[in-house]
Image 1 (cartoon, rainbow, N blue to C red):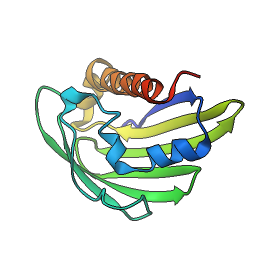
Image 2: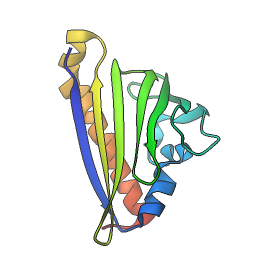
Image 3: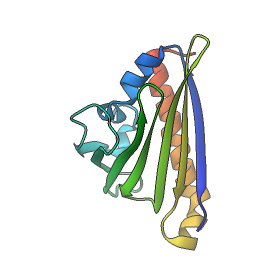
Length: 153
């Protein structure tokens, strides 16, 4: 089964501390997720991020179908990066690395997602028409939302 990689970078005119404070709070994920996805945290967002943290939420990624998604924060290096991995949800594999790097005048945030789609060959056929465009749309929304919150680099 094919493993896909989605890679996105965004520059913001804020400090590393500001970026980390925002991104490392699970509660802020709702803020940077499109409203139509019906994102709702069920549990696990009641304390600052730590390795081993389990976060459960409901999301409606496509066609109004509500899906429970469970992620585990597997790695955390305060102020620099964290990794979340899907334990239950819509993907056959989801491994999402979040990096924050200092640059002149701000930070560069980098997301690298390695993922597999479900349903084998049928999922692979749907990937370029459904899954990849949806990821691009979600991250474009995040780019716009973060710029609205923190300014444009």
